Length: 507
Ligand code: FAD
Image (cartoon, rainbow, N blue to C red; front, side, top):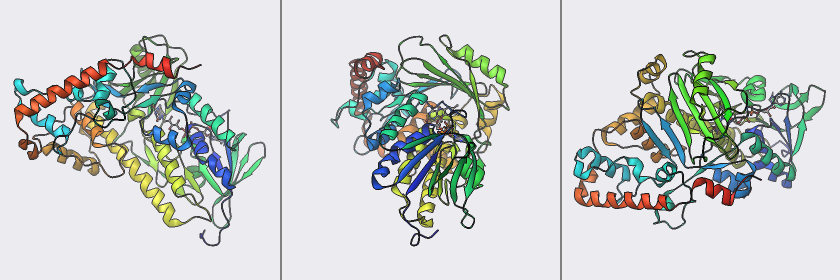
């Protein structure tokens, strides 16, 4: 379709009402004010994937973009605050580190903090031992103490280097966004789509037809149909590129449980013989799950591992989900964009799916077509999203590859497998002098990579030679002071549960 001859786009149809569908509907609902009708079709009989309870700090941008009030949102989703992810037994059995949100320490004379820490660490001198790098992140200091406060606005305060995200109930989140979107003019249609119609010449999608015969026409379609990928995959035939050779986990069993104590302000990910377990504390329950490779463990054993790992009584039956890590070759084809699981999936080890949904939505808004579809804009969309998926993929692979575990076939496979060149190059650079340069559109900053690299014992051979310009004794004093201030600041923060109860307790 050429941009010049096409009439303005007036009918937008979203297929699917999971997290992706309702986040998209909420974000585009303001278009209704510009004369674009927005219709969302979902099927209660099919339902949603229903998991997706841990987020990352970028969700603040989405909430800000649509004007969500934080306390109301946290209360409505039975949410809690998240300061990072604790990884247990990943580098080797017995290891424990937190990937924090926010920063480590403070740079000196333009030298990155991790380089300063590294130089002191590599001295191997008890008098100048900086201790673990975890001690220099306020998010970790607070998480370990079960405390929470919002970042301070003042740039020089330790609290200004803190960042946070949320744990939320995915079903309640979709409900919350639905009421927001409907209040802004989005029309919801309940029903199961049986067929998808395409225009004879262009192949564009022209309508979706429900099993009861209702026909919903559109000019632009957003495929949020989940793993089915009803429009992009099934109708337009865009192939799926599997990353299973790097990310062999293809199954998950999820089960909620009661609380064993006050909700902790972080997600926990515990490595298992053939995958890992998650633990996500909400206000009303704890979400638990075991992600595993079905080539290495059977469902029954995986379920038993999950149940054995629960610290309180389960409160519902377990649910099993299957997936293949990867992405569609394109995310936008003709007059259809896939957002959410219909476009791709990377296991939830770093809680990235909701972020990728949001990123797709922001790009879609930035490139929203007015009169027809411009191939250059479609290419720009695909290019950006594909790169983002691949950066996330590399970061997830790092967790599996950077390990000393050799206690199962699964770990022997992931530890020794070939990794993407893009990751191998980054690792080689890091190992030499602790240098690291994430791509410009990488979701994860250097702080995140450092957390996993150091947390999983990938210690560079040397620090950046620039650090030699800092006197050792002075640096030791600076670090001791910083460590003390961070610990004191964390001690002074309110207990996480108290903070939630005071500001955003669920009704
Ligand atoms: P779905 O929830 O599957 O929704 C699909 C929608 O399409 C449904 O409304 C369905 O009814 C509709 N539909 C499908 N076919 C038809 C049809 N024929 N007719 C009408 N309607 C139809 N993400 C995170 O960010 N953090 C996490 O902690 C996290 N944990 C996860 C754990 C697991 C085990 C899995 C599998 C995923 C996890 N995710 C997580 C990902 C997250 O769950 C999804 O990204 C998110 O829920 C979006 O799903 P979706 O809306 O794309 O698909």
